[in-house]
Image 1 (tube, helix red, strand yellow):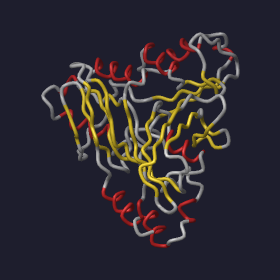
Image 2: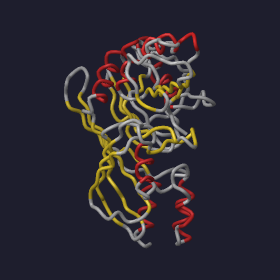
Image 3: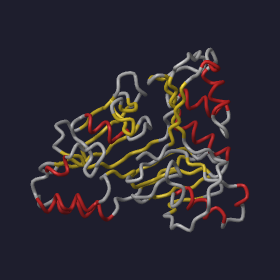
Length: 316
């Protein structure tokens, strides 16, 4: 599943010839025009499957798809869920998210999320009345690692602008199937909803621009451990890109095409099955502090279950 929420509209006759940005402003409550404009600029708004411009005049029958992140002012039900807080000040927090934790409520999931946990944590602070969880970016449910949270609207706007300008550095560790031939590589392939399966993403001509840069950290007999730097932040980007290369992420049940079940060594195959997650971890995060302008850098080591699998591969 994705931790983002996707809205889909079919344009009727009453909205024909309206500008795209005006239609979105009237159709999506709780979002300012400037934030909706960012979605359009970041190619998170598609018209008939392709990125569009704010001034596009809608036609009857157009399909408009909008991928939303959570607005800073959203109210969540506080829930006492343990958090691994790597860093925190009055403007922001950096969280080391475990695999299995959904970032924010979406269709069918209204509790037990990181947003609910943050609401509880902020409620305990002296300035709780002015804080709402502003989730600046996303991690998939079964991806672990560093996540940035804004505590004020000003911080959220600033950090969102940094993501948009691609000055935020994000590096992931991924274990993929097969031996990568090149030590380094670029995957510059557009991503959009899979036209044959709307619950998945895929490399699609005319989709959103997506760029991933990888470097081999270590090779095993039938696996490769990668460092992957994201230059864009599309839904499931690393998983989709590596699957497109025919080197899917280990443990990825959605994009893995059954590769986990083809591992010859029964011990390793069982270990992968028991992971209950994909081998994808947001290891490094760097950004400019919105208040002090200081460059902040954080690292989160691999969770124990991922370290254990790598240890098993030593003898594979």
